Length: 350
Image 1 (cartoon, helix red, strand yellow):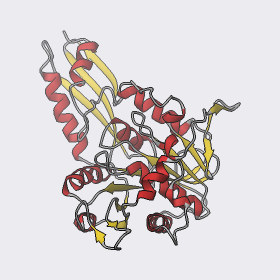
Image 2: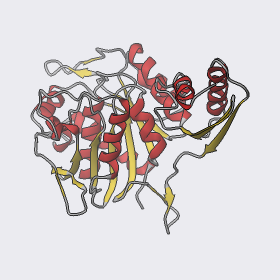
Image 3: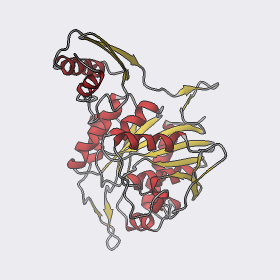
């Protein structure tokens, strides 16, 4: 006779399509009902992609029918729409995070493309435009925002038991880097990682933000899926470099957002070119035109091409993002401010 434990173990072999995590650990299994040898399982899925519930139904049915002594199996799958931005009195969408009007995710298909540098500088550029801006470092395992903003203050709780974000350079910041020493690793499994992420988003006292920028971990994993299923994102930006090996993974990130109905605001090509200070010649160290070709292939905007500059690296190491510098004298700063203008046009707050 099947038991609830054996049924959960079988269902734990069923992966959510496109991700490495199973439907049990994601909390999609809402009920298990056993009547002799017959089993009914209740599953709830938030998606607009009809292929997702079909694939889960087929995989779960196969897993259950393989159990010894199983009789008839029935799957009740509830299909819900993903969280949409709520509509306010002005008929404009509002995010589901208290204290925040708009949420923009910055993602990359792989590490090493400068995603956190882009996220930091875009947040600064949005703030310099006059918008109240916050930056949440969702990369629990490799947090870098604390270092890039030159502060290791410890956040505290207010009377409402909310975490008060750190303020620096006019931004509200939250990162696991504020909780740990530089040498302390974060050793948590997927479910705890997603719990910490939810705390950073919903239990932080974000104060009247026009934009909250999310610096997502690289890749397409648990944290990204949890955010997209529980937060009404107003759009996502994918960061890549020009070479094909980075573009391959950028396509995966774009596909992830499309599967979960998150609008793609565009692609940013980082480390696009190098201007030699000696002769003024332009060198395309990582190739030329990859981001532009990919944006056309995917039919999404190319928001900007960020040059390689020593000042970008130095500014990040010194805790002074380059977007704080005058765009008229710093090409990288100018590029970030130009992208920020395009984002404001694409995702207005009023």
